[in-house]
Length: 115
Image: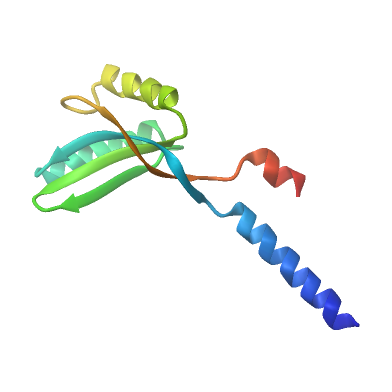
């Protein structure tokens, strides 16, 4: 029956789409800034996006502060390397902290190639 083939193809397409979506996991981010100065937050955000385009920058507002977080790191060692780099380039005034958070994980490239 043709309907079974159509259903099988739709299910396979659904599974492929599900496999390439980002998923959530426990990991680490860098807490860069907590300030009420919007201009400073935007300057730091733009510098980070220019120098690290492959990493995500998260900006949130919790009255009266703007909080800036950086990256999706699976292990603490990777977060520490970026922390040292950001501090050495003096992108952020003050200190940078590593915090445990739920992060977004993109699928591995090998898994995408297997399909």
